[in-house]
Structure formats: C-alpha cells, structure tokens
Image 1 (tube, rainbow, N blue to C red):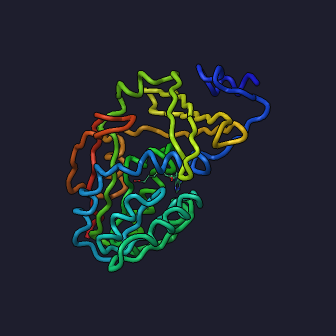
Image 2: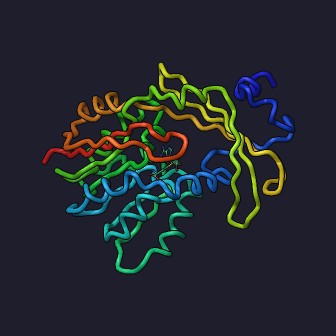
Image 3: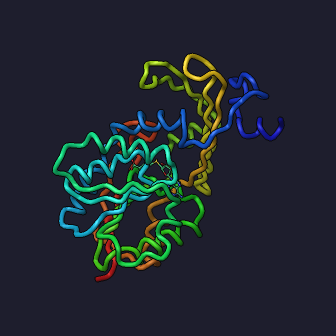
Length: 278
Ligand SMILES: C[S@@+](CC[C@H](N)C(=O)[O-])C[C@H]1O[C@@H](n2cnc3c(N)ncnc32)[C@H](O)[C@@H]1O
C-alpha cells in the first residue's frame, strides 16, 4: 500500500476502503460528468475561435474535443466539424448534444481516436484546426506534442488556420498553493444524486507536470469508492510557440485573456492564431 499512499499526499485520510476501491480513467464515469458540468459555462475562448474561422473553407478539426464545447459552437455557426477525442464517453455525449443543436447548422463527424493516430497519413484535408480551453496540456510528452503538431500541419490545407490556447506562464499562485493540499467539491448528477469529489494536486513549477488525484467516496451516487489519476503538463506559451514555429506554423495573432472563473481564475492565457504556409 506504500505506493498508493505516495500517490495521495495529504489525501489518504479521506480514503475509506483502501482494499475495495475502483480505479477508472478520468474521462469516464463518474468523473466525465463532473468535467462536463464544470466546463459547461466556459466560454472565454469561443469568440476568438469563431472569429478566426469566419472565412475558413473546409472542415475544422476539433482536437481533444471532450464533450464538444467548441465543436457545438462551431456547428451552430454553420461550420463542418470533425471532433476527435480518445474518450468514447465524451464522444457519445457530444453526439447526443449535437442532436439538440438547431437546424441549419454545419455537419458533425464525431471520432473516438487518439489524436496522434487520427492525423497519421492525412494531407491537405482540413480547412482549420483547434485545441480549446488549454487542452494542449493533455499532451504531456514533448515528443508526442511535436509529433502531433507536425501531423496537424500536414493535415491542414495550405494557408489554413490553427487556433489553440496555452497558459502565458505556469508560474501560477493558484497551482503553487494547491500543491499537495486536498480540496472537496460537491456536485449533483443529472438525476439529482449528490456526490462529493476530493482532489489532490501535485504540481512541479520547474517541469510543469501536474498530477490530479481524484477520489469519490461511496455515498448516494456511487456504491464503491472510485479513484482516478490524470497527468498533464502545464505548457508555457513561449515553449509552445517555439515548437509551433519549428513545425512551420506562422504566427498570425495572439490574444491574452484572463480566465474569468474556476480553479484557474485570473490566470493569463494566450490564444494563438496561426497559419500553415500558403
Ligand atoms: C479538458 S478536456 C477537453 C476540453 C475541450 N478541448 C474544450 O475546449 O472544451 C481534455 C480532453 O483531452 C482528451 N485527450 C487527452 N489525450 C488525448 C489524446 N491523446 N487524443 C485524443 N484526445 C485526448 C481527453 O479525453 C479529454 O476529453
């Protein structure tokens, strides 16, 4: 059990049944629902994304789309969107939500796939690409990120735009202060069952590595305690800009926005608008 406790600094006190605990990937039930509720009112990047694609021709690929926050916004504005995520649960939710979008909208092709795998061998196929809400942090290995960005470049038409957001700097007091200290959040599922989630973050400012350990004790909503770990890397804008320009992307504009609410409230994010060479 030593390894397990190491994963949970300051959190072991909350864990009830160390021997009877279910481990699940983060973007699967029940954590996927928490993620959906938690991000359903995130809108700060949407106007910049739709402005960037106002004149784009050809389908836009939404990379690591989650439940489709960005995809739904784009199809409601008439774009054709290919929405890619490795979580089948997220893609299912998106397909259902897209059924509720008003008529006279663009088409949606939801795809369950690892993003790197999806782009392999594709050339001049898309009119644009987007990674919303600093989801670039899901790609925590620099080699994988470089590989992904190179494949995205090749898959885009000449002159197509690529929009992504990244933290201006990961030196964030919010993350530094939360490092190792568990916090509890209460939320309710769609059917009204209430639950709590205890989260402990481990954050290294030096490397940007962020590990999020999440625990839902047994209660009204779950019969058995459930645990999940998610590992990300908080990239700095300057690191990502270097990789993007080495990949061949030309920078068109960059807009700095302060995240209006949530765990990273007040953090500065750069929304980068780039182009492939014409
Ligand atoms: C924060 S959520 C997505 C938020 C979404 N981009 C938005 O703007 O609302 C991060 C997503 O990245 C997905 N993801 C992580 N690694 C991935 C990979 N290698 N390929 C595809 N999707 C991935 C996860 O399944 C998850 O749905």
